Image (tube, rainbow, N blue to C red; front, side, top):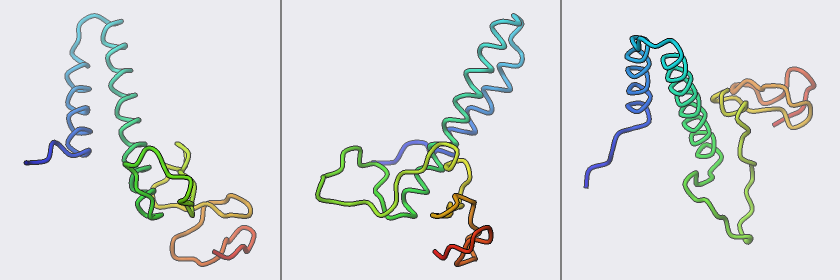
Length: 111
């Protein structure tokens, strides 16, 4: 069985819908539709980034319920953290860490 559309294809679809919505003649209807579509794009970006972040931490992003026997090494990222794809926060001061550094440039905490 073939897989459905990818997340990137869905986001491209939403971008096309935004372009089409800009042509809606009624101002209120156009603004409401644009708001809905732009919110959907933001949620799609957050979902995609969170999914990738969970995978990087070795956590199954699809599994909704986790057994109490299994302990996760990293918590699920918050929405703001999910938007910062590829960034890890310092365990000491919460500054954004560079991927190529083994320590926090702000406080010296080591990964």
